[in-house]
Length: 536
Image 1 (tube, one colour):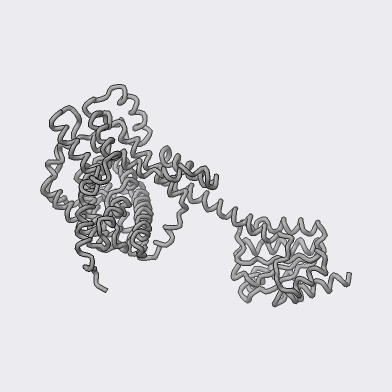
Image 2 (image 1 turned 180 degrees about the vertical axis):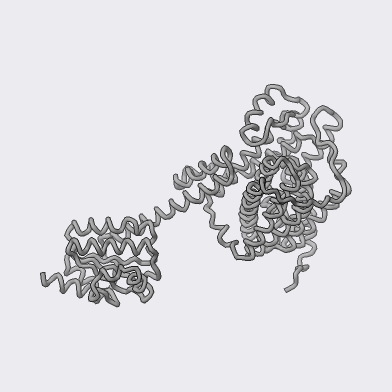
Protein backbone atom coordinates (compact mmCIF):
# COMPACT_ATOMS: atom_id res chain seq x y z
CA UNK A 1 0.00 0.00 0.00
CA UNK A 2 1.42 3.40 -1.00
CA UNK A 3 2.35 5.84 1.77
CA UNK A 4 0.46 8.61 -0.05
CA UNK A 5 -2.94 8.01 -1.64
CA UNK A 6 -3.24 10.36 -4.62
CA UNK A 7 -6.61 9.08 -5.78
CA UNK A 8 -8.35 12.15 -4.29
CA UNK A 9 -5.63 14.72 -4.98
CA UNK A 10 -7.95 17.50 -6.15
CA UNK A 11 -10.24 17.12 -3.13
CA UNK A 12 -7.25 16.96 -0.78
CA UNK A 13 -5.79 20.17 -2.23
CA UNK A 14 -9.10 22.00 -1.80
CA UNK A 15 -9.58 20.58 1.69
CA UNK A 16 -6.04 21.51 2.75
CA UNK A 17 -6.27 25.07 1.43
CA UNK A 18 -9.70 25.69 2.97
CA UNK A 19 -8.64 24.26 6.32
CA UNK A 20 -5.45 26.31 6.30
CA UNK A 21 -7.49 29.48 5.87
CA UNK A 22 -9.79 28.44 8.74
CA UNK A 23 -6.82 27.53 10.96
CA UNK A 24 -4.94 30.83 10.52
CA UNK A 25 -6.90 33.06 12.94
CA UNK A 26 -7.29 30.22 15.42
CA UNK A 27 -3.55 29.50 15.43
CA UNK A 28 -2.72 33.15 16.07
CA UNK A 29 -5.38 33.40 18.78
CA UNK A 30 -4.30 30.21 20.51
CA UNK A 31 -0.67 31.29 20.42
CA UNK A 32 -1.52 34.62 22.01
CA UNK A 33 -3.69 32.95 24.67
CA UNK A 34 -0.96 30.43 25.53
CA UNK A 35 1.56 33.07 26.55
CA UNK A 36 4.13 31.91 24.02
CA UNK A 37 3.01 34.41 21.37
CA UNK A 38 1.05 34.30 18.10
CA UNK A 39 3.98 32.99 16.04
CA UNK A 40 4.32 29.99 18.40
CA UNK A 41 0.67 29.20 17.76
CA UNK A 42 1.15 29.51 14.01
CA UNK A 43 4.16 27.21 14.00
CA UNK A 44 2.29 24.79 16.25
CA UNK A 45 -0.37 24.52 13.54
CA UNK A 46 2.31 24.16 10.86
CA UNK A 47 4.50 21.52 12.50
CA UNK A 48 1.90 19.42 14.31
CA UNK A 49 -0.50 19.76 11.38
CA UNK A 50 2.08 18.58 8.84
CA UNK A 51 3.79 15.74 10.71
CA UNK A 52 0.72 14.38 12.51
CA UNK A 53 -0.97 14.11 9.11
CA UNK A 54 2.07 12.49 7.51
CA UNK A 55 2.58 9.81 10.19
CA UNK A 56 -0.93 9.58 11.73
CA UNK A 57 -3.58 6.92 11.36
CA UNK A 58 -6.61 9.01 10.37
CA UNK A 59 -6.69 10.07 6.74
CA UNK A 60 -8.75 13.26 6.97
CA UNK A 61 -7.63 14.35 10.44
CA UNK A 62 -6.27 17.92 10.64
CA UNK A 63 -4.17 18.66 13.72
CA UNK A 64 -3.01 21.83 15.39
CA UNK A 65 -3.47 23.85 18.58
CA UNK A 66 -6.84 23.20 20.21
CA UNK A 67 -8.70 24.84 23.07
CA UNK A 68 -8.08 22.04 25.61
CA UNK A 69 -4.36 21.83 24.77
CA UNK A 70 -3.93 25.59 25.05
CA UNK A 71 -5.54 25.73 28.48
CA UNK A 72 -3.08 23.14 29.77
CA UNK A 73 -0.10 24.62 27.94
CA UNK A 74 -0.86 28.11 29.25
CA UNK A 75 -0.80 26.71 32.79
CA UNK A 76 2.53 25.01 32.09
CA UNK A 77 3.94 28.20 30.58
CA UNK A 78 2.95 30.19 33.67
CA UNK A 79 4.13 27.60 36.22
CA UNK A 80 7.57 27.41 34.56
CA UNK A 81 7.86 31.22 34.33
CA UNK A 82 7.89 31.09 30.54
CA UNK A 83 11.37 29.48 30.45
CA UNK A 84 11.48 28.09 26.87
CA UNK A 85 14.03 25.39 27.75
CA UNK A 86 11.69 23.91 30.38
CA UNK A 87 8.33 24.70 28.78
CA UNK A 88 9.17 23.08 25.49
CA UNK A 89 10.92 20.18 27.20
CA UNK A 90 7.44 19.33 28.54
CA UNK A 91 6.08 19.49 24.97
CA UNK A 92 8.87 17.24 23.65
CA UNK A 93 8.32 14.70 26.44
CA UNK A 94 4.57 14.78 25.82
CA UNK A 95 5.27 13.86 22.19
CA UNK A 96 7.52 10.98 23.23
CA UNK A 97 4.85 9.71 25.66
CA UNK A 98 2.26 9.74 22.88
CA UNK A 99 4.61 7.77 20.63
CA UNK A 100 5.06 5.19 23.41
CA UNK A 101 1.28 5.01 23.94
CA UNK A 102 0.91 4.19 20.26
CA UNK A 103 3.80 1.70 20.16
CA UNK A 104 2.43 -0.20 23.17
CA UNK A 105 -1.13 -0.23 21.77
CA UNK A 106 -2.81 2.01 24.37
CA UNK A 107 -5.01 3.74 21.80
CA UNK A 108 -7.96 1.44 22.40
CA UNK A 109 -7.92 2.13 26.15
CA UNK A 110 -7.80 5.92 25.96
CA UNK A 111 -11.15 5.83 24.13
CA UNK A 112 -12.76 4.19 27.19
CA UNK A 113 -13.10 7.46 29.13
CA UNK A 114 -16.87 7.79 29.83
CA UNK A 115 -18.80 10.42 27.90
CA UNK A 116 -19.95 12.42 30.98
CA UNK A 117 -16.29 12.83 31.99
CA UNK A 118 -15.28 13.93 28.48
CA UNK A 119 -18.29 16.25 28.27
CA UNK A 120 -17.62 17.85 31.66
CA UNK A 121 -13.92 18.16 30.96
CA UNK A 122 -14.38 19.77 27.55
CA UNK A 123 -17.17 22.05 28.82
CA UNK A 124 -14.95 23.13 31.69
CA UNK A 125 -12.17 23.99 29.26
CA UNK A 126 -14.65 25.99 27.18
CA UNK A 127 -15.65 27.95 30.29
CA UNK A 128 -11.97 28.57 31.11
CA UNK A 129 -11.30 29.92 27.62
CA UNK A 130 -14.27 32.28 27.87
CA UNK A 131 -13.22 33.43 31.36
CA UNK A 132 -9.64 34.11 30.23
CA UNK A 133 -10.77 36.21 27.25
CA UNK A 134 -13.60 38.26 28.76
CA UNK A 135 -11.35 41.00 30.20
CA UNK A 136 -9.55 41.26 26.85
CA UNK A 137 -12.86 41.99 25.14
CA UNK A 138 -12.99 45.18 27.22
CA UNK A 139 -9.41 46.12 26.37
CA UNK A 140 -7.73 44.86 29.56
CA UNK A 141 -5.34 42.04 30.35
CA UNK A 142 -6.30 39.63 33.16
CA UNK A 143 -4.39 40.31 36.36
CA UNK A 144 -2.42 37.17 37.17
CA UNK A 145 -2.57 33.72 35.62
CA UNK A 146 -5.33 31.16 35.86
CA UNK A 147 -9.11 31.05 35.90
CA UNK A 148 -9.74 32.64 39.31
CA UNK A 149 -7.59 35.75 38.66
CA UNK A 150 -9.21 36.05 35.22
CA UNK A 151 -12.69 35.99 36.77
CA UNK A 152 -11.62 38.57 39.38
CA UNK A 153 -10.37 40.84 36.57
CA UNK A 154 -13.75 40.96 34.81
CA UNK A 155 -15.56 43.48 37.11
CA UNK A 156 -12.70 45.98 36.82
CA UNK A 157 -12.54 45.57 33.04
CA UNK A 158 -16.31 46.04 32.70
CA UNK A 159 -16.31 49.17 34.87
CA UNK A 160 -13.45 50.79 32.93
CA UNK A 161 -13.67 49.59 29.31
CA UNK A 162 -11.55 50.61 26.35
CA UNK A 163 -14.50 51.49 24.13
CA UNK A 164 -12.56 50.97 20.89
CA UNK A 165 -11.50 47.47 21.99
CA UNK A 166 -15.01 46.71 23.24
CA UNK A 167 -16.55 47.76 19.93
CA UNK A 168 -14.10 45.59 18.00
CA UNK A 169 -14.71 42.69 20.37
CA UNK A 170 -18.49 42.92 20.07
CA UNK A 171 -18.24 43.20 16.29
CA UNK A 172 -16.03 40.12 16.24
CA UNK A 173 -18.53 38.19 18.35
CA UNK A 174 -21.36 39.23 16.03
CA UNK A 175 -19.41 38.09 12.97
CA UNK A 176 -18.27 34.70 14.33
CA UNK A 177 -21.70 33.86 15.73
CA UNK A 178 -23.88 35.14 12.89
CA UNK A 179 -21.70 34.95 9.76
CA UNK A 180 -23.95 33.69 6.91
CA UNK A 181 -23.38 30.05 6.00
CA UNK A 182 -23.40 30.79 2.26
CA UNK A 183 -20.53 33.25 2.73
CA UNK A 184 -18.79 30.80 5.05
CA UNK A 185 -18.23 28.52 2.07
CA UNK A 186 -15.91 31.15 0.60
CA UNK A 187 -14.47 32.87 3.65
CA UNK A 188 -14.82 31.45 7.20
CA UNK A 189 -16.42 33.66 9.84
CA UNK A 190 -13.31 33.67 12.04
CA UNK A 191 -11.10 34.81 9.15
CA UNK A 192 -13.63 37.48 8.16
CA UNK A 193 -13.70 38.75 11.75
CA UNK A 194 -9.91 38.83 11.84
CA UNK A 195 -9.63 40.83 8.61
CA UNK A 196 -12.49 43.25 9.31
CA UNK A 197 -11.44 43.85 12.91
CA UNK A 198 -7.81 44.47 11.96
CA UNK A 199 -8.69 46.90 9.14
CA UNK A 200 -11.02 48.86 11.45
CA UNK A 201 -8.34 48.93 14.14
CA UNK A 202 -5.90 50.53 11.69
CA UNK A 203 -8.53 53.10 10.69
CA UNK A 204 -9.67 53.78 14.28
CA UNK A 205 -6.65 53.26 16.58
CA UNK A 206 -6.86 52.96 20.34
CA UNK A 207 -7.31 49.25 21.00
CA UNK A 208 -4.33 47.17 22.25
CA UNK A 209 -2.71 45.23 19.39
CA UNK A 210 -0.33 42.28 19.21
CA UNK A 211 2.70 44.38 18.28
CA UNK A 212 5.89 43.06 16.67
CA UNK A 213 5.77 39.40 15.64
CA UNK A 214 8.96 37.56 14.68
CA UNK A 215 9.11 36.49 11.06
CA UNK A 216 11.07 33.84 9.18
CA UNK A 217 11.98 30.34 10.30
CA UNK A 218 11.62 29.31 13.94
CA UNK A 219 14.70 28.96 16.13
CA UNK A 220 15.82 25.66 17.60
CA UNK A 221 15.04 25.31 21.32
CA UNK A 222 17.55 23.36 23.40
CA UNK A 223 15.66 21.69 26.27
CA UNK A 224 17.10 21.96 29.77
CA UNK A 225 16.94 19.36 32.53
CA UNK A 226 16.68 21.07 35.93
CA UNK A 227 16.10 18.86 38.95
CA UNK A 228 13.98 21.42 40.79
CA UNK A 229 11.50 21.73 37.93
CA UNK A 230 11.42 18.15 36.64
CA UNK A 231 8.33 17.14 38.62
CA UNK A 232 6.32 20.01 37.12
CA UNK A 233 7.72 19.23 33.66
CA UNK A 234 6.86 15.51 33.88
CA UNK A 235 3.37 16.19 35.27
CA UNK A 236 2.74 18.67 32.46
CA UNK A 237 4.09 16.26 29.83
CA UNK A 238 1.84 13.42 31.00
CA UNK A 239 -1.24 15.66 31.06
CA UNK A 240 -0.48 17.14 27.63
CA UNK A 241 0.11 13.66 26.21
CA UNK A 242 -3.09 12.15 27.60
CA UNK A 243 -5.24 15.17 26.80
CA UNK A 244 -3.83 15.36 23.27
CA UNK A 245 -4.43 11.64 22.81
CA UNK A 246 -8.06 11.84 23.96
CA UNK A 247 -8.68 15.00 21.93
CA UNK A 248 -7.17 13.45 18.79
CA UNK A 249 -8.93 10.09 19.05
CA UNK A 250 -12.31 11.73 19.63
CA UNK A 251 -11.70 13.76 16.49
CA UNK A 252 -10.73 10.56 14.67
CA UNK A 253 -14.08 9.02 15.65
CA UNK A 254 -15.86 12.05 14.18
CA UNK A 255 -13.84 11.65 10.98
CA UNK A 256 -14.74 7.94 10.83
CA UNK A 257 -18.45 8.72 11.10
CA UNK A 258 -18.26 11.29 8.31
CA UNK A 259 -16.08 9.29 5.90
CA UNK A 260 -17.35 5.78 6.74
CA UNK A 261 -13.78 4.67 7.36
CA UNK A 262 -11.92 3.27 10.38
CA UNK A 263 -8.85 4.98 11.79
CA UNK A 264 -5.81 3.32 13.37
CA UNK A 265 -5.75 4.60 16.96
CA UNK A 266 -2.21 3.53 17.75
CA UNK A 267 -0.77 4.94 14.52
CA UNK A 268 -2.66 8.18 15.16
CA UNK A 269 -0.99 8.47 18.56
CA UNK A 270 2.42 7.90 16.99
CA UNK A 271 1.73 10.62 14.41
CA UNK A 272 0.56 13.06 17.07
CA UNK A 273 3.62 12.26 19.17
CA UNK A 274 6.01 12.88 16.28
CA UNK A 275 4.30 16.19 15.50
CA UNK A 276 4.38 17.42 19.10
CA UNK A 277 7.96 16.34 19.79
CA UNK A 278 9.20 18.18 16.67
CA UNK A 279 7.08 21.22 17.61
CA UNK A 280 8.74 21.32 21.01
CA UNK A 281 12.22 21.51 19.49
CA UNK A 282 11.18 24.61 17.51
CA UNK A 283 9.34 26.51 20.24
CA UNK A 284 5.90 25.77 18.82
CA UNK A 285 2.88 25.11 21.04
CA UNK A 286 1.51 21.54 21.14
CA UNK A 287 -1.56 20.40 19.26
CA UNK A 288 -3.99 17.57 18.70
CA UNK A 289 -6.60 16.47 16.23
CA UNK A 290 -8.91 19.48 15.78
CA UNK A 291 -12.54 18.51 15.29
CA UNK A 292 -13.76 21.69 13.61
CA UNK A 293 -10.84 21.85 11.17
CA UNK A 294 -11.20 18.14 10.40
CA UNK A 295 -14.91 18.60 9.63
CA UNK A 296 -14.10 21.56 7.36
CA UNK A 297 -11.45 19.47 5.60
CA UNK A 298 -13.84 16.60 4.92
CA UNK A 299 -16.65 18.88 3.76
CA UNK A 300 -14.21 20.62 1.42
CA UNK A 301 -13.20 17.35 -0.23
CA UNK A 302 -10.20 16.21 1.85
CA UNK A 303 -9.95 12.53 2.68
CA UNK A 304 -6.26 11.56 2.96
CA UNK A 305 -3.17 12.68 4.86
CA UNK A 306 -2.20 14.89 1.91
CA UNK A 307 -4.91 17.38 2.89
CA UNK A 308 -3.52 17.83 6.42
CA UNK A 309 -0.01 18.28 5.03
CA UNK A 310 -1.18 20.92 2.54
CA UNK A 311 -2.91 22.74 5.42
CA UNK A 312 0.46 22.89 7.23
CA UNK A 313 2.35 23.97 4.10
CA UNK A 314 -0.09 26.83 3.43
CA UNK A 315 0.29 28.12 6.98
CA UNK A 316 4.08 27.93 6.62
CA UNK A 317 3.90 30.20 3.57
CA UNK A 318 1.79 32.64 5.59
CA UNK A 319 4.25 32.56 8.51
CA UNK A 320 7.23 33.35 6.28
CA UNK A 321 5.58 36.08 4.20
CA UNK A 322 2.70 37.65 6.13
CA UNK A 323 3.71 37.43 9.80
CA UNK A 324 4.64 41.17 10.04
CA UNK A 325 1.10 42.15 9.00
CA UNK A 326 -0.30 40.18 11.94
CA UNK A 327 1.25 42.70 14.34
CA UNK A 328 -1.75 44.99 13.75
CA UNK A 329 -4.32 42.45 14.97
CA UNK A 330 -6.15 43.74 18.10
CA UNK A 331 -6.25 41.59 21.24
CA UNK A 332 -10.00 42.13 21.43
CA UNK A 333 -10.52 40.56 17.99
CA UNK A 334 -8.59 37.43 18.93
CA UNK A 335 -10.48 37.35 22.24
CA UNK A 336 -13.81 37.42 20.38
CA UNK A 337 -12.69 34.55 18.15
CA UNK A 338 -11.62 32.53 21.21
CA UNK A 339 -14.89 33.18 23.03
CA UNK A 340 -16.64 31.52 20.09
CA UNK A 341 -14.16 28.62 20.30
CA UNK A 342 -14.91 28.27 24.03
CA UNK A 343 -18.65 28.35 23.38
CA UNK A 344 -18.30 25.62 20.74
CA UNK A 345 -16.34 23.43 23.15
CA UNK A 346 -19.04 23.64 25.85
CA UNK A 347 -21.38 20.67 25.38
CA UNK A 348 -24.53 22.77 24.91
CA UNK A 349 -26.31 19.96 23.03
CA UNK A 350 -26.01 17.61 26.01
CA UNK A 351 -26.85 20.26 28.60
CA UNK A 352 -30.13 21.04 26.80
CA UNK A 353 -31.34 17.46 27.11
CA UNK A 354 -29.38 16.28 30.17
CA UNK A 355 -32.52 16.34 32.35
CA UNK A 356 -33.97 13.56 30.18
CA UNK A 357 -31.00 11.26 30.75
CA UNK A 358 -29.60 9.45 33.81
CA UNK A 359 -29.29 11.85 36.74
CA UNK A 360 -25.95 10.41 37.81
CA UNK A 361 -24.40 11.19 34.42
CA UNK A 362 -25.48 14.83 34.74
CA UNK A 363 -24.09 15.06 38.28
CA UNK A 364 -20.80 13.55 37.12
CA UNK A 365 -20.59 15.93 34.17
CA UNK A 366 -21.22 19.00 36.36
CA UNK A 367 -18.73 17.77 38.96
CA UNK A 368 -15.97 17.28 36.37
CA UNK A 369 -16.79 20.68 34.82
CA UNK A 370 -16.54 22.38 38.24
CA UNK A 371 -13.26 20.67 39.12
CA UNK A 372 -11.83 21.56 35.71
CA UNK A 373 -12.64 25.25 36.13
CA UNK A 374 -11.86 25.78 39.82
CA UNK A 375 -9.29 23.09 40.74
CA UNK A 376 -7.23 21.61 37.92
CA UNK A 377 -7.58 19.37 34.90
CA UNK A 378 -5.71 16.37 36.32
CA UNK A 379 -7.93 16.22 39.40
CA UNK A 380 -11.05 16.63 37.27
CA UNK A 381 -10.23 13.72 34.94
CA UNK A 382 -8.94 11.47 37.73
CA UNK A 383 -11.98 12.02 39.95
CA UNK A 384 -14.35 11.69 37.00
CA UNK A 385 -12.90 8.41 35.75
CA UNK A 386 -12.76 6.88 39.25
CA UNK A 387 -16.34 7.88 40.09
CA UNK A 388 -17.60 6.68 36.70
CA UNK A 389 -15.84 3.35 37.19
CA UNK A 390 -17.22 2.93 40.71
CA UNK A 391 -20.71 3.80 39.50
CA UNK A 392 -20.42 1.23 36.71
CA UNK A 393 -19.20 -1.44 39.14
CA UNK A 394 -22.07 -0.65 41.52
CA UNK A 395 -24.64 -0.82 38.73
CA UNK A 396 -23.18 -4.06 37.38
CA UNK A 397 -23.05 -5.57 40.87
CA UNK A 398 -26.66 -4.64 41.58
CA UNK A 399 -27.80 -6.21 38.30
CA UNK A 400 -25.80 -9.39 38.97
CA UNK A 401 -27.15 -9.73 42.49
CA UNK A 402 -30.69 -9.03 41.31
CA UNK A 403 -30.33 -11.75 38.72
CA UNK A 404 -28.71 -14.20 41.14
CA UNK A 405 -31.30 -13.61 43.84
CA UNK A 406 -34.27 -13.98 41.49
CA UNK A 407 -36.84 -16.47 42.75
CA UNK A 408 -37.40 -17.65 39.18
CA UNK A 409 -35.40 -20.77 38.25
CA UNK A 410 -32.57 -19.84 35.85
CA UNK A 411 -32.89 -22.91 33.65
CA UNK A 412 -34.97 -24.10 30.69
CA UNK A 413 -34.07 -27.77 31.15
CA UNK A 414 -37.31 -29.73 31.91
CA UNK A 415 -35.50 -32.25 34.16
CA UNK A 416 -33.83 -29.50 36.17
CA UNK A 417 -37.12 -27.62 36.48
CA UNK A 418 -38.84 -30.77 37.69
CA UNK A 419 -36.24 -31.27 40.45
CA UNK A 420 -36.52 -27.64 41.57
CA UNK A 421 -40.31 -27.90 41.62
CA UNK A 422 -40.19 -31.08 43.70
CA UNK A 423 -37.79 -29.40 46.15
CA UNK A 424 -40.42 -26.70 46.78
CA UNK A 425 -38.00 -23.85 47.21
CA UNK A 426 -35.57 -25.62 49.52
CA UNK A 427 -32.87 -25.74 46.80
CA UNK A 428 -31.35 -22.51 45.50
CA UNK A 429 -29.25 -22.57 42.36
CA UNK A 430 -26.95 -19.67 41.47
CA UNK A 431 -25.99 -19.55 37.80
CA UNK A 432 -23.30 -16.88 37.67
CA UNK A 433 -23.75 -16.52 33.91
CA UNK A 434 -20.32 -14.95 33.44
CA UNK A 435 -17.48 -13.42 35.45
CA UNK A 436 -18.58 -12.35 38.93
CA UNK A 437 -17.73 -8.68 39.51
CA UNK A 438 -15.94 -7.82 42.74
CA UNK A 439 -18.81 -5.46 43.57
CA UNK A 440 -21.32 -8.33 43.50
CA UNK A 441 -18.90 -10.68 45.28
CA UNK A 442 -18.73 -8.33 48.26
CA UNK A 443 -22.49 -8.75 48.95
CA UNK A 444 -22.95 -12.33 47.81
CA UNK A 445 -22.27 -13.86 51.25
CA UNK A 446 -24.87 -11.64 52.93
CA UNK A 447 -27.44 -12.50 50.27
CA UNK A 448 -26.88 -16.24 50.76
CA UNK A 449 -27.30 -15.96 54.54
CA UNK A 450 -30.66 -14.28 53.98
CA UNK A 451 -31.73 -17.16 51.72
CA UNK A 452 -30.82 -19.71 54.39
CA UNK A 453 -32.81 -17.81 57.02
CA UNK A 454 -35.85 -18.17 54.71
CA UNK A 455 -35.64 -21.97 54.88
CA UNK A 456 -33.38 -22.80 51.94
CA UNK A 457 -31.53 -25.99 52.82
CA UNK A 458 -29.26 -26.56 49.81
CA UNK A 459 -27.30 -24.13 47.72
CA UNK A 460 -25.76 -24.90 44.31
CA UNK A 461 -23.12 -22.63 42.76
CA UNK A 462 -23.05 -23.23 39.01
CA UNK A 463 -19.89 -22.12 37.18
CA UNK A 464 -20.81 -23.62 33.79
CA UNK A 465 -20.81 -20.20 32.11
CA UNK A 466 -18.09 -18.60 34.22
CA UNK A 467 -14.75 -18.42 32.36
CA UNK A 468 -12.73 -17.10 35.32
CA UNK A 469 -12.98 -15.72 38.83
CA UNK A 470 -10.91 -13.21 40.76
CA UNK A 471 -9.80 -13.08 44.38
CA UNK A 472 -12.90 -11.14 45.49
CA UNK A 473 -15.17 -13.90 44.16
CA UNK A 474 -12.98 -16.60 45.71
CA UNK A 475 -13.15 -14.90 49.13
CA UNK A 476 -16.94 -14.65 48.80
CA UNK A 477 -17.14 -18.39 48.06
CA UNK A 478 -14.93 -19.08 51.08
CA UNK A 479 -17.30 -17.08 53.31
CA UNK A 480 -20.30 -18.98 51.93
CA UNK A 481 -18.58 -22.34 52.51
CA UNK A 482 -17.74 -21.46 56.12
CA UNK A 483 -21.27 -20.18 56.79
CA UNK A 484 -22.78 -23.32 55.23
CA UNK A 485 -20.79 -25.54 57.58
CA UNK A 486 -21.81 -23.52 60.66
CA UNK A 487 -25.48 -23.44 59.58
CA UNK A 488 -25.58 -27.13 58.65
CA UNK A 489 -26.57 -26.40 55.05
CA UNK A 490 -25.55 -28.18 51.86
CA UNK A 491 -23.20 -26.35 49.51
CA UNK A 492 -22.62 -27.90 46.09
CA UNK A 493 -20.52 -26.83 43.09
CA UNK A 494 -21.33 -27.63 39.46
CA UNK A 495 -19.59 -26.94 36.16
CA UNK A 496 -16.35 -25.62 37.66
CA UNK A 497 -13.70 -25.76 34.94
CA UNK A 498 -10.25 -27.07 35.66
CA UNK A 499 -8.89 -23.54 35.99
CA UNK A 500 -11.58 -22.44 38.45
CA UNK A 501 -11.23 -25.64 40.46
CA UNK A 502 -7.46 -25.23 40.60
CA UNK A 503 -7.80 -21.64 41.82
CA UNK A 504 -10.27 -22.57 44.54
CA UNK A 505 -8.18 -25.50 45.77
CA UNK A 506 -4.94 -23.58 45.39
CA UNK A 507 -6.20 -20.91 47.80
CA UNK A 508 -7.55 -23.56 50.24
CA UNK A 509 -11.18 -22.69 49.51
CA UNK A 510 -12.12 -25.82 47.59
CA UNK A 511 -11.09 -27.99 50.54
CA UNK A 512 -13.89 -26.43 52.60
CA UNK A 513 -16.48 -28.01 50.27
CA UNK A 514 -16.78 -31.81 50.54
CA UNK A 515 -15.31 -33.69 47.57
CA UNK A 516 -18.61 -35.48 46.87
CA UNK A 517 -20.30 -32.08 46.46
CA UNK A 518 -18.46 -31.25 43.22
CA UNK A 519 -20.33 -32.11 40.00
CA UNK A 520 -19.69 -31.74 36.28
CA UNK A 521 -23.20 -30.50 35.49
CA UNK A 522 -26.18 -28.88 37.19
CA UNK A 523 -28.56 -31.81 36.79
CA UNK A 524 -26.28 -34.11 38.79
CA UNK A 525 -25.91 -31.50 41.53
CA UNK A 526 -29.67 -30.94 41.70
CA UNK A 527 -30.40 -34.67 41.85
CA UNK A 528 -27.88 -35.15 44.66
CA UNK A 529 -29.31 -32.23 46.65
CA UNK A 530 -32.89 -33.48 46.26
CA UNK A 531 -31.96 -37.03 47.29
CA UNK A 532 -30.19 -35.70 50.38
CA UNK A 533 -33.21 -33.58 51.33
CA UNK A 534 -35.50 -36.63 51.07
CA UNK A 535 -33.35 -38.47 53.58
CA UNK A 536 -33.98 -35.82 56.22
